[in-house]
Length: 496
Ligand code: ADP
Image (cartoon, rainbow, N blue to C red; front, side):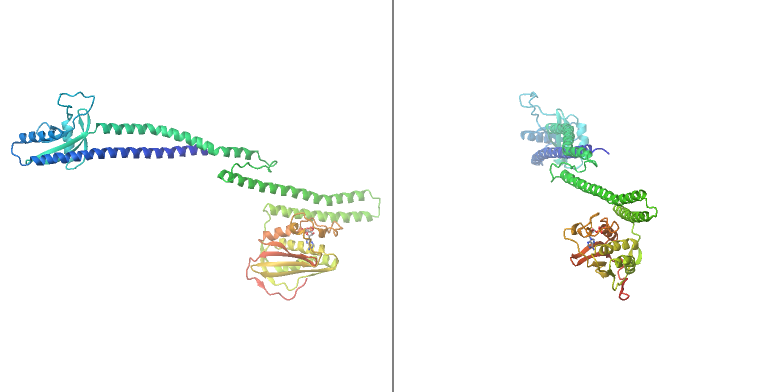
């Protein structure tokens, strides 16, 4: 494929050449039409004059020769030179006197009349013309004549009359005009190619500059931007769009970098703890094994936390890469809630928290039960985890306006207003988490809400903080109803 510059040049040259061709052609056609119309008009005037003269001779006595001689004489008095066709062809031709300055007069009477060069050619043309009133060209002694012929009778004898006018100058003018047009065409084409090339070069210059700038931008200097000369023109718009893409790539890279840094940071603590415990145990002299046991327990707890974080990171990374496939199957949301709460019951009981899910309606849903269980676990786990002392956590399920809403409410400490905008960010830990995560086990990595939100989004839904006051928080999982009508009334008051 040729470059845009070459194509622009070719298009420009082509279009310009076409325009010049059409204009020159039209100008030539108009010039020809105007010249021929003018000649035809004088031929018609001349025809009228000759016809009137013939009419004046009608009915006069005398033989043919005398009649013709009288007619010719009359025409000559009207300033027309007249030739009679040699032979018996009965053709009378009026002919213009030559007015050529270079032509020396043959006699003192005035300029020498022209003569027809080829009478046979004229006869052929007359025969071909039939009764048409169309003008045609004939060759005279010095150049061309334009002629008009018609048949008329002179004293009941058929004659062909021909009137003629100089055509030499007009033909020459037309020829000169045609030559000039043919000469102008290549010149115009050359100008078109040159101007097209310069135009394309000028128009595409900034593109080349932009390309060079774009080539210099890589992963290390992705914060750099293309310079914009005019934000309103098309190239400015292109540069703006390109800069927008760069900004998004930059933000994504930055997020990736932060994610990697945060992840390494989170993994460092349990890994360091495992190592320390192992070292302490190894250097211990406790032969009864009490310290070994304690060290092993601490190591187990840290390993648990480690695998939880690794699992969370894995899920988030796969969701980012679009690899987390939702294994949707027909499931009961109410049953999923009940079994999730059952699993968390020991944790709640240990903290003296009442975990309840009253009157769950029966909801058949197409979703991934494992992922949904994980999302709900994260919310309920937070509610239990951040509760200071005994309290109550309640889970509800409702069908509302084309969606199902799972509500998790607690009467814990609530979330401070400054934390709310960051709640769903990865690795974000709020105020409420601080004074209470004494043990490694209870401290979250700040991924729970981010994961819950990702899971809901994978199902086409969302997770929101519906309200948070000092009296507690309410989180909601919204899931679009993908099986409308599959809601039945609760099976009765239910608690897990
Ligand atoms: P973490 O692993 O720290 O629990 P999350 O993403 O689940 O991370 O939660 C982020 C932060 O939101 C927590 O550190 C905590 O400060 C706050 N938070 C979440 N749920 C609750 C809740 N039910 N009550 C009070 N604070 C909460």
